[in-house]
Amino acid sequence: MFTKNFDGIKPFEKKIWLASPTMHKEELEWIAKAIKDNWVTTAGDNINDLEKVCAEHIGRKYGVGLSSGTASLHLAIKICGEKLYGQPKVGHGTLEGRKVFCSDMTFAATANPIAYEGGEAVFIDTDPDAWNMDLVALEKAFAIHPDVKLVVVANLYGFTGNLEKLVEICHSHDALIVEDAAESFGTTYNGKQTGMFGDVSIISFNGNKIITGSTGGMLLTDSEEDAHKVRKWSIQSREDAPWYQHEEIGYNYRLSNLVAGAALGNYGHLADHISQKKAIYERYKEGLKGLPLSMMPIIDGCVPNYWLSCAIIDKDAMCKQVRSESEKEALYVSESGKTCPTEILETLAKFNAEGRPIWKPMHMQPVYRMFPFITRNGTGRARSNAYIKENGIMDVGADIFDRGLCLPSDNKMTAEQQETIIDIIRRCFG
Image (tube, rainbow, N blue to C red; front, side, top):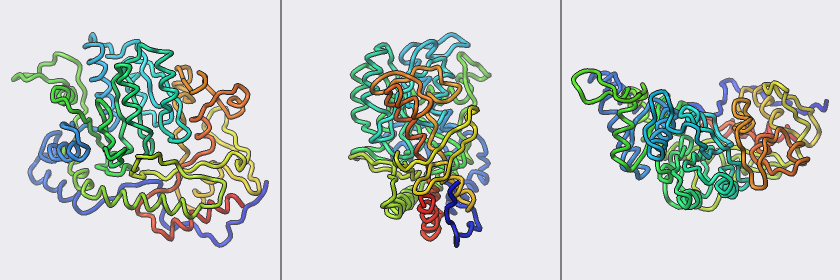
């Protein structure tokens, strides 16, 4: 095996994370207020204020604070399912036996709530120029499955595709949109905040997001009726009665007033966090210039929040890389002038820095591999680049997963530390 030279580089004394919470003094003030007022529950001023500021920031009329981004996605999909197909029988989901179009290259939380509601996800391939849902493939999907009336779309890593065109396509087919803006709070497309493009949208306050409360999420809507229903569902669907009365199934999904306090304090630093993340992306772009590698693309009209800085290696600069049959391990052969995501990530880890593979596409996940998958030029479930080449399938998500990686993007990383990371990456191509 070819040995690459990392002489003179010392491991970081303190780990450089992919993206860790960045907290400030204001969070403690809001949390302390909740404790002082004894509102240590799933009600209180912090929740009310967070719902108001987030809805106003994005431009929606109503926000409903929930326990996580996933809980928010579940109830967003449930409310759309009920609008489309009516209230289900107890023990059945609102999407029972129905297909739903879903982003393919995303975290599993985007797709799982479709299954919670009894639906079948149809995964839509990824646009090579945007790394978000491929709208050509989406139009093809509507031609194949004209009865589909719900689309779940994720804004990947804080970047977007052409959201206006997405809305146009979906509404021309009378389909509702759930916009998963968990990773894109603060991102705009043509001057409009993400979270405004879905019929129902969500954001996340998970620990690694651009704004965090340690956990938590929010559903966003312009419908007062929907907001009221979701809020009711989130507290076990308790009716307005002097006793515990339940006329439909509910959930324990309401946001904690303490978590809301942390998120409120963090929210005041959104602009600073975005500025810091942008500087990280631009330092990578400049520092890696000249390598056979490119950064995640930014399409015209998109102003990202730059949550994670991601890159993709040119095809002819990839060393040999395979993943095991169990799909839990990866092997590579180090080659002069070439590298691969596995080599870079393992090397960064040796120097105490955390990167991560690109989201593994949903159609490649064992749990979803038998579900429908639609590309621009065919339907299929490609397993490797060899399969793609042999069968002529343009499986963009599989290709980006094979060649792409998320670089350390923590906004507490100093410029000097990032320069060391850039040096490590450059030497991986040595």
